[in-house]
Length: 340
Image (cartoon, rainbow, N blue to C red):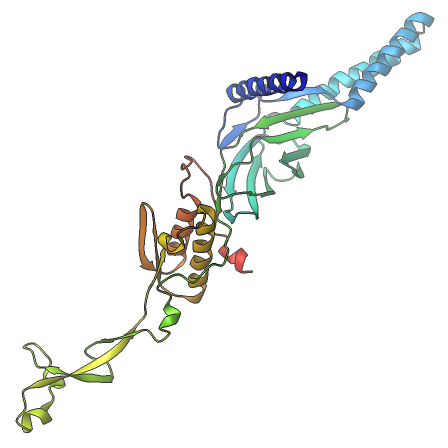
């Protein structure tokens, strides 16, 4: 009973804190750190340092020691100056979401950020933390720097890892300054490809394609009755000499048989399993250079090939039944990385 009440209280406090953070630092593609977005507090080492200063002050008062007073106030001044320098290490920085590489479910997505400074002031020991991934940079030479973090995308759809933590203890380690910013960046996560039964209409059933008559080819196909408009080059004059009706020669060519990846080909399977099978065959036929189309509930794409066609179908599989996110940032297709 008590644990359940405590859990509800914690969830309520967490919801209030989240709402407060959303008002104070709303989601944005680009954020410039200022006084409103930066938090600062003594670190554990800083708290111990303050405790030592307090003991030194008490001892100096007790023994009326002027050197003790001087040392205490000198160290206190150093602490105050450290506060200003630690705050300045984050102040003025601009963080911008660049891209989030699309991946398949269960893979690591590369989130790329750009950190820039408005002035010549140098910034050191900038520690970025997103989920369990961290990266530390120094912004001392160039005016901007890239930060790349690799985060695990657990399931298909749009993946946003939540608020990004940026903190620093520079220069003394006595003060911790930090911020939590919500960058409006999402990674597109495709279904995890899983091989399933060969879909109906697999071109491997007809590896040479279907034979169709094409006038002007080199391979003789047969004869047909002459029709007005047929080329005189294709008239079979021997039949005329024999007193037979006028006929024209037909020539053949081979046409590839296109594949249809149909949602109904996997009836009875769970939704995610269907999507995984379709995703696998999209990658398979794309690698083989085949033309393929796809039918999903509410979506149909005619057979085609190429990167653009493949990415369109993968996107539809990723967002099947998922509400689209606005203002997302995505990157290049991960198919090359998957193949490697």
